[in-house]
Length: 455
Image (cartoon, rainbow, N blue to C red; front, side, top):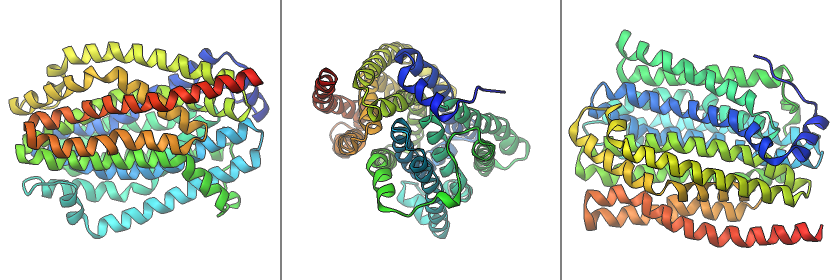
């Protein structure tokens, strides 16, 4: 597959002059595909492992928190460096962009390796902390011990993918991430059923598939398909680089870590209602993650446009890009929410035939589908703050959904209304986050309009 390669100057012209709507759709389409296929990693494991029984399905839900931590490492350095890189490229500071990316790449890999060593030293204690019950602990340890080995290249895949997107070459990231996901779909049934490896086979398939993605993504930089130059010589352990990475990457770190915290809370507060509740809420999380991955992919089409526009002081393009994405996202996810609400029962049947699990999951999916339009507004608002370097605003919004609101709600509500409290916690958090997002985004848009009129 061949794609047109633009040099740095041609890419700058495209990012600052091509009509906003067509540019966003051009950038977002491969990213949406990449995100959907990538999220199939966890979906595929859940679907195939669920055939082994309710306990196996619940075990995958427990280890999902470990995978979230691995992703948080790669996404923090990926998003932090990518949005910084897009602004540097917009300002034509290309040497600095290479330094930021190379530093992020090697730091991401090193941090993931440290997590691997720490996790393997106490895997049993780790899965217990994440909410594993005695009946699912053994399978959770089997799954986690393999996943932890692949953490270094799994994390750095997200770092490379985000930086390819930052320079407007999302199609290269799509090629790498989707190739690994497709391989995972092929390997899962072979390892789990044909070779009889069970849940450990699912983990091995995921790790090998992510390794395949790593080599494809890495080749884009080695073969100079990217305008960014990856090299140890470009690594700079300088304050300004890490400051910019963490200022912009902090929202991604908080968001992903809080997903982990919320997943732990979900497991812990579902446990009193049985392994069936853990399995049902785990499946619900995978389904909503799959649907939201399309929204995140669409938002990632917005981010390089927003970053370039902010760096080039084209505030009119930034306003147009944001309003177009919000309108499109809200309309699309209203439609998706209606379809999934109607088909929630059949979605659950894709995973398990256990009637208790299906009943619990159907209700949970329907509650979350009702609020999908608001969730799209929340996500896109946080992403535009992140891509323009407003790390504090983006961090607050990231903390709100899974931290400020979700954790207290799920901690209190099940004790008041039982299982319904577990099912309602996320929708309630989404409503509260919507109110907070409005309070942040309206003044920001007003500021952009004033800057546009001055310019």
